[in-house]
Image (cartoon, rainbow, N blue to C red; front, top):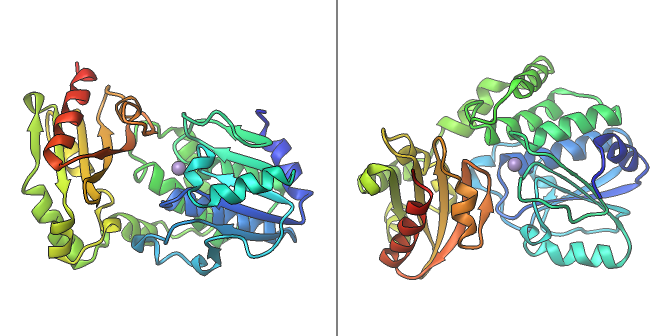
Length: 322
Ligand SMILES: [Mn+2]
């Protein structure tokens, strides 16, 4: 059932104890959405617990309050909220807990911005926009909770992450208006910018150099791919979370419309990140392999050795090039 944020705000205010879940391999928008909502609810006297199935990425370790996040709920709750999550499966191991809650007739709420989300909760609010934190900001306003510096910083974390620092093509007036409101509330945009987009460990810098030295081009330079093998990561002492953002570099090469990174997730299993520049639809390309995401950014898994994976992918990409 499609609900308004106002209705959801009312439902949240009536809750006593809320569990907040977000997707596996969380990003800044997932963490920012969950922690901002948690803080707002707590300020209204509602108990919350925030859960994510995966370890938290190293680039987000600077975020205050991460210790609040656990891998599963430790106590009972009377409402379950999923944020920035397009389907129950995206909760990973927490999907079991989600279906358990459904069986126990605990109300579930979904607040999300993914185009692929068709609703999976008792109350669903799904509308595409640059970042899910924009919905959370509106929700917090409806709830009548304060916008303090910390809440503003959680929201800005999500907004900056998913808007690519106000640069993606779904960035609109609403993004800047929210950005202005958050900065006015005290969010440190300079610190967030450095932490999210500039700071990197030496291992990442080393890996970056090696990977970008091997960019491969296909289809007259319209498709560029990079390969991040396990061996290369080991050589540089890097871990998969350090490869966040790598795929943007080949996308920026002149003439490239589609860029992909193939990260060796397990032997013979590649985690594919896709980005498109102007017209190709990344979610459709990823969809061919059971993945999904947004028009400009999507992901999927591919199996086989690296040459097989690249063959398959470049053939599929070709179908979406003009
Ligand atoms: Mn998001």
